[in-house]
Image (tube, rainbow, N blue to C red; front, side, top):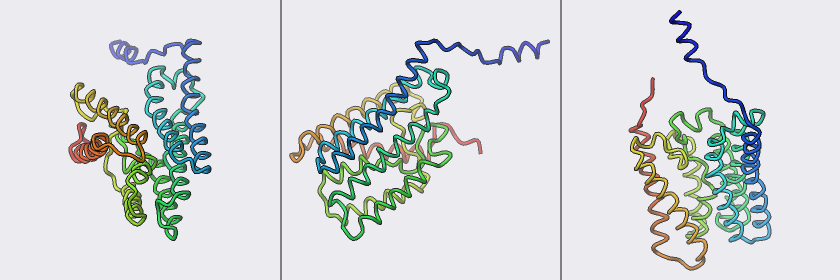
Length: 257
């Protein structure tokens, strides 16, 4: 009898999906899919050599990706619209915006040396295909495994710094290799296992927002520069790498193995 009561207590309560929740769920999926439309506009801008416009559109796609997961969790998207695989939709849109479009940007511009441009871009495509399709590309403790295909962000910095094409080539090849190395990179919108201190998680979220504002300011001022904005933007990148390396070797939740 006690076992029967315990079993009943462990049964998950299935809450009915209201019409409002279902409608809101479809709106969230529509919002995620709109990132693909923004990506198409980015491609068109690159094709027309409106590179600054293209970078703004790429930034808009990042913003959509940064908040759509939060909306999905709030509406309990899997319950609201069970017939749509939200994770698959997100990956399809992300592969376009984080990999395919930045690669087209690299092909159209002179960021890379002409003779090695296609080889580098194909290396990025292969590395991203691997990164996106790993079973544990997003780990159980909400980190990215391997360089998380931030090619749109990498392209922005290379465009901004105006370094030699060979230097850019080395940087991009290095990032492609890092896609295969199992370092755990911080997932900025999922900080559950970054630290057990909620204030520190909030601080990391705020710092990420400051980075976004500073980086947008760099793009707004381009081709002029501002040392404060540059320092904030690059400082965050160093902090991000440092915290990612720390949590790789000192996880908050240790493996069961």
